[in-house]
Length: 428
Image (cartoon, rainbow, N blue to C red):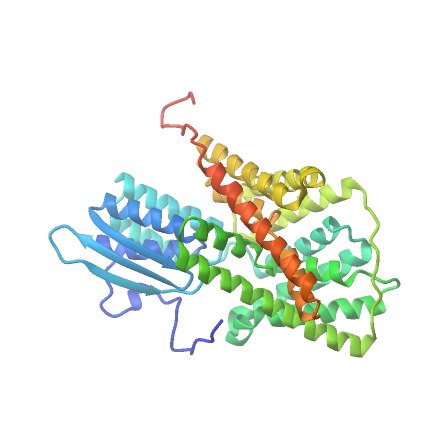
């Protein structure tokens, strides 16, 4: 990621841009809606569909192109010349609470319940809302996710403590990165470097050896861009080639940064503490793994910035995704189990959203966290860094196969058409 000079503020409101369309104009609302959707993590194909529907409702023709760092909109008003706008934006981050509010505002404008100027003012209010959770809650969530994942990966007490410590350190670093451009743009490398040193240090002073690899993958799991990789594959599959390619290279860059930081940390760790022998993990009880899945899913609530009342859906998504993969992969393999898992998550999201006002993304996003091949991608990069080219390439191919399977399952589930509840209709 290229460093941006301080004078270039990509998060700047359109109100601060000279001669930008006012919020009181329909064009102003469309531009601000596009920027808001992008800011809170909507993929290119969903953003373009929403903007096309909104512009059509307001009487505008539109051509929209969304990429991870820019939105290009050409609006064609009736009886006037076309106008083209380019909005420079930073890559979006998932914020389920704000995304749900923005989707509701867009729906109200398209239904005619509120006027575009009112919708634009509501978008500004959403943007100004403070973070849903305090910093200490975010740090705790990082810690809990890492500890839970280490148990899911068959880690024992040593791996759980080490992974939790890595998650805690990365959580603190993520809070500090909000105030430092240096940390923000080099965050994956610095986080993996610190995490690796923490793993080596705790292993050296712990009473028995722990698995460095399991501890590291579990500790860094929330940083692995598996979800970004899957979204990139989905964008490519839906012919959003520019956005999909850019997002794919963004995910690859993050993998490389994580691999570089871990390699540097391993070199220093070996210099300080010597080589560490490989540790064979022993099977753990099923009940403890399910508790870990439950706790890890709960910890995703603040990391996705979802409301507490929506936590039940995130936990449901995590449990059903894990159960699908756990009980199908021994029979059909990792790729096909990911395919089945994506279908189950996609159908669950469609059914729940058709029966209620719960957005499908609230099911799909956390569900895919349990399915995406982030840990496999990290393993591939580490193998390449260690000059194990054949193993690295084989593992990288596994990442692509699992990613394609996820996208295929999600697209297949999207073909299913379910009846949607209408107001005043008690029968489905």
